[in-house]
Amino acid sequence: MSVMYIRGGTPLEGELAVHGAKNSVLPILAACLLARGPVVLRNCPRLTDVTAALSILRRLGCRVEQAGNTITVDPAGASGCSISEEQMRSMRSSIIFLGPLLARMGEAHLTYPGGCELGPRPIDLHLAAIRAMGCEVSEDRGIHCQGRPRGGEVQLALPSVGATENAMLCAIGAQGPTTIVNAAREPEIGDLQSFLNSLGARVRGAGSSTITVEGGGKLSGGEYTVMGDRIVAATLLSAAVSAGGRVRLSGVDWRHLATVLSVFHQAGCRVESGPDHVELIRDRDAPLKGVPTIRTAPYPGFPTDAQAPVMAALAASQGCTLFVETMFDSRYRHVPELIRMGADITTEGRVALVRGVEELHGARVEASDLRGGGALAAAALGAEGTTVLSGLHHIDRGYEGLEEMLQRLGANVERREA
Ligand code: UD1
Image 1 (cartoon, rainbow, N blue to C red):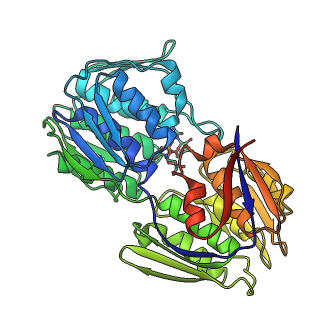
Image 2: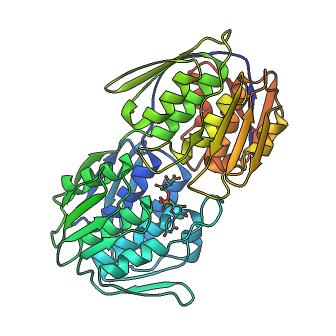
């Protein structure tokens, strides 16, 4: 088992290009099934979730090559339509293959997906979307879907990111047009639309609540560069807020981080942003301030994935901050670990009250989910003494070489075998 040793108290200084977005590359990899020729994807992060997606593509008959941050998928020989239970359990995003499988094969056999334990994460909206496009779905010892999608109107009861993407991908292979109503508006959906259109699809409306897809077209192969990861950026900025210093990140669009940057500004940090960069300056001698209630919400609201890192950053501050997690039931699993580091946080259901303390201290803590892990690293960098962070397999699902990124910003971090 490996652990991270993190010595806090050194301000972060420097510049870093943020790696590609996990939540973009996963649906884009699934979308490669729809292409007729090879697809070359650049800026793909090396993450265990990406490895899991590549293993699913191989099982389905695609040829896949990974060289550094470039992945080539040749879907010409794809013929499979089932994904094993082990592969489905390896990550929540395995469900994103459902739409492309139906679009390409007219048949899909899966099981329920695994992923981070954030409370119940049903897939009813994904299945309702598939049904609305004319496919048959049966849930008898697994999920079995049949039929070529014919398109139509998909009304999502909630703006689910995954269900929106699944509906878009299924609709590409439909005989007629599809309209997705109450679609999620996350930037990664815009990236998926750009990718699909670069291969010849006709998808419009991503970023708004209504997305239209003209089905029937065959997609070509092509080349595409995946967008930067706004949640990795939010985590690195949280680390800089916690440790103090000056950090400039490139490769992300600051507008995708507007709600998070506004919190850091209100807490007393200086934030400067341009078209392709964001810079944060925090003077460690000036204490952070608590901020008005942070309520997670679908984009363009405050991202649930940034809740834990931002909470970690504000744990040592003057005043209180109230968090309301509206997206997932069980997303405060980092709180007991922050308390071990000296934080004063009380949770009640979906609400967490952070009473700022003067300083956190190092402790042995364990990541129990991906973003909670990023949060503990951010907290440790501002804490007095050394933190030993375990549960790194969660972190490796969504951060490519977190310790290397932090080292490049001057942090005292090391991964060792325990
Ligand atoms: C995606 C992101 C994840 C982020 C989340 C919310 C990816 C790979 N993951 O996850 O990082 O935390 O969006 O921004 O992009 N729901 C249902 N039924 C469904 C589907 C969802 O009730 O069929 C509910 C969920 O339980 C949750 C809410 O809808 O309460 C939002 O979930 P959703 O947007 O689907 O999240 P994911 O796509 O799984």
